[in-house]
Image (cartoon, rainbow, N blue to C red; front, side, top):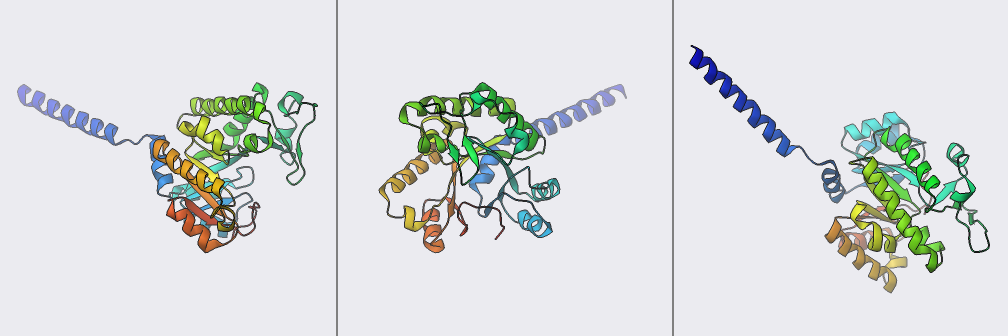
Length: 287
């Protein structure tokens, strides 16, 4: 009887061990899973305003939605994620928006980018200022924003807007240290919030030379055929992004502002994701 009891216990132990071991092998890595889901995205949306029941239902049918987490209600985020939608939260990386008063009031003078004359750069269209990523205080504030609005709300990733400002608005001699600081900041995100996916808007050279190993997708706005279809610079960047995707798995999310059919065809030719937004760089209405 004792021998049978030992055999049964041994059998149960081996069965449990095999089940646990099998489950451990099948347990997906969080980052890998998101990369695979991003690679499979067919329908995505970039929307920066509040939700409602109609929008909430539409979000459930998307593969990916980028939201302004201060505006989008938690109930719609949760419902969409439950249905398999990836939700990324917007964080303005290289600009500080004055409308975000709670964040703006915490800024110090060292956080603002200033040119050789000590002047700040103001963007009247967006009511925002260009920021200095080399400021450790500014990086700290951004990390707190990510904790509060991305991590604590259970979002799948953070979408860093205005990364392209480094290439677009800074003199060449300033770009290196800002790019290095951006890389340091993104590494901090990855280290502090293990498994959190990171994406960036624009900043093709920043991506190619610094951030690509840590970025799961990059956004290309105004990927419109009349703008990029026959432009040598754009065609060169397309090839560069294809190469980076092959090397690092960084997906490309494009947004067309005009020529929907031709723009979509160009994006799909290179296996880029595409959505059409005739309103241009304004994402406060759900079409």
